[in-house]
Length: 325
Image (cartoon, one colour):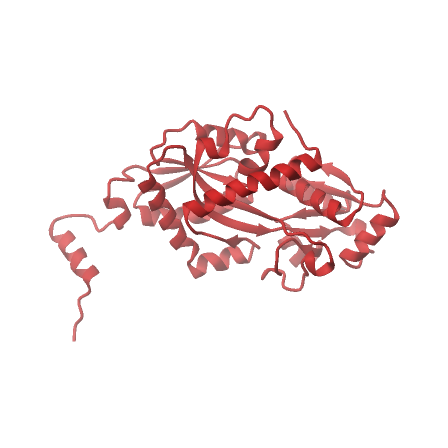
């Protein structure tokens, strides 16, 4: 017996009328033009990868091209600043992250935007556990307790790399250092890539970052701990900080933001489309292999999260003494 579904009848009716069988999201007025997503960093980094991976399926659901625009500069503040001045019509979105929406407002005195005053949070995309990795300089270190013991015995023993003053890596290590009760010399670099290179060459001893997994898997670096509440699938044999006596949980994150005043219906459409995409097994598998956890949820939940992060990260910035003009 032939079964005709309701969707088949709808598509047949549309064809009879000469209408396009485009996704339902595209038939309700918005979007009628390409949607631009600003990535406030150069191509090739984690934020760029996340945005480009989601752009194609989002375009399919919205029925319009989704164009990624890289607007790097000044720790992400240039691109986010541009997004804050865009029309609140749904055609310009921006990838916000722990740095641009959580840390920078407490670091830069002359910041040209305020996260919750200039943007409407749409959806949280990621929650990324960081990894403490050591290179050849610290090949004698057995595990995290051993690292702490050596640093306590010799206050000049430890130095660590970061992507720059006031970055997520810098604050993560300062939080670890404070909880562990040790001293460590901070050596900032101009981004994660040169910091990783310094770690791998032995120029510095240790680093906490979310991009070390490939080097750990190929044996170039060695992981001592992850900063998540539980162990991560990408590195199942690496214990958490808490398992090793350091009461620390710290994750990086990304999310989509829209200029303040964007129509709630548009925010709801983008949220619903991305929430569906993030639940797809193939998307979860692809990101999981890179140690990138996917979140999703409502725009209200993301708003509450950004608000909480502003308070928590503000306290961390104050503790670290990080500031940039």
